[in-house]
Length: 252
Image 1: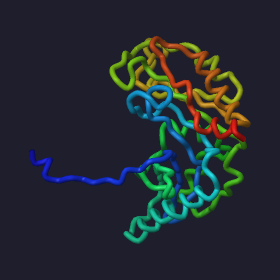
Image 2: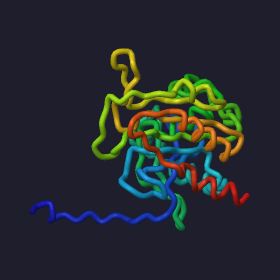
Image 3: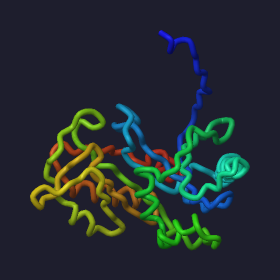
């Protein structure tokens, strides 16, 4: 058909995918720690693509030189280009970036927070979120060293059976209160609802279990400990979130 009259040729990018989030006020921006999402439904990056099965931050496999390149070659030029077009961008810029042999390259830009990356970021954030967001409309620059708790944070998606394909809803959820009592843990709701006063599943990605730790290993262990205390019929989650970061951490 007519669709075959036009061919789009794209550069194939091979490498490690990460996320960079910036709170922007024109050409000025506040950088959040780099994140990595896990898109595939199953362990070892197998299965179908999803909205995200977990994330962690910061990234021990990204060195200062690479991070500087991301700012100098991607984020700052993007905001400057918007300014030259008369667009004073105020808000969140979330960039998916591939770390390649040629350096960091852009896969896409989004004007929103990442999910499930933001859940991990919120566990690591020391500053008041309102103060961070207020940077989009004020001129006060927040100091990076005051923004973050030391350590690492992990988010783990608890999904409905069958997700990202067909799945059932309305299934009772248990154990959230127990999980939330664990040190460094916070359970975020996603696809949930109240039915007759009882919490039930209402989507594919049901809950996001986030945890903070002094080390990446501790953050991962806390997240999985919390996930083990939560239950609903058909619940599944990946068992290898942050594997690329753990591989580097164990070597160190």
